[in-house]
Figure 1 (cartoon, rainbow, N blue to C red):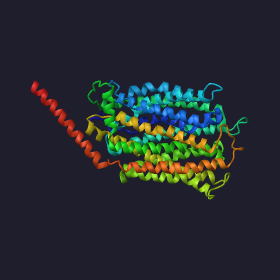
Figure 2: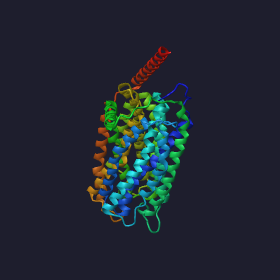
Figure 3: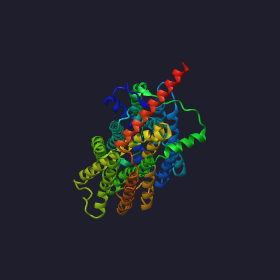
Figure 4: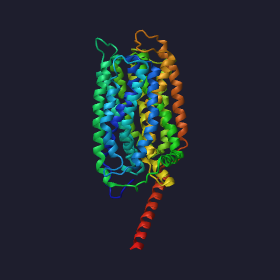
Length: 491
């Protein structure tokens, strides 16, 4: 499906409405990667390895459901387009299952807690998949312009960050504020209940607003011809052929490793804030805003670097810079060169360094999202099929590595250093959070640098993308001419 020549230019309002839907995904993401492990481990009292293993099982389920939804949305034909029926249908079940995730039965523990997280967690992730993958696949249908796609991706990621950051800030500053009963607000169970209620409502409204706000563009799309039912084995064969694109495989390797690093950092940041830096919930809330600063800068940095250096080169450089900024505070603390806890410069310095880390991570994610869009046309030349849904299913799976593989690694590191459930910051052995930092830094470096190495094998640049578009235009003209010739002969 491509945009017809009669389609008006994609306006700012449409870009914003398209991006707003990512607020829901951002809320889901911050729930899984920042709060779920801490909540079940330190509030409910479930072992960290069990919680992280349950989250990983949900990610494995995603590996199956994501491409199915992507393939389905590529081939469905309705008067509302290929994507919007899925997007609209996802709103209520996605919001409802998120609510249940933070309302487990009283006294749940052990394997019962494990299976509860698996079942409800799979529900949350599957229902948000029915929005996120079709919505992501809508991007290359909205525009085929090389630079415009980066702009569209910027809005999508900005609002995704805004949803996650906004919910994290509100939760830490308000819902998890210290009380007489819970001096460490991060351990207050009622705060997580409030997070779930407010987050579910915001998720529902964001999905509906984005779906309805982009529905008017469907009439400008030129739908591809309907695909016949091929049977499950032929369908799997088509999926394998689509996913064998070398440039996409490079993106897949990059994305899985980088997003795993992001997820590990997000899951451990609240642990480090609580046990290593000895911060209050309000100070943690302030630090959450560094992501918003980074995302705001990245909204302009990503398109600028894309034009100057190309998407691939910019993404590689940003990944290297991100890991340098991300590791700096922990290396300085371990070498005795960082501010002591309670120093008035500690929080501002952490804020500055983390803002730079998030700016690089956000910009790199935007570029990766846009690069997936450029793969669509090159794959179409090779296979004869437009498979936005499949490609963006895999792209969404990369992002879900933050709250799957990343949180799993975080849980394993927590268990490895011996941080037990329901630990108090006042009584914990101070060597434990330092040991956590010691194992965290090498893991972060390995993930990011390995990710950057994968991206070297991605070869699509501006010139090759424009050449691919021109080849497709020629093919379309030849196809239309052939149809007209047959019609004339019949007449």
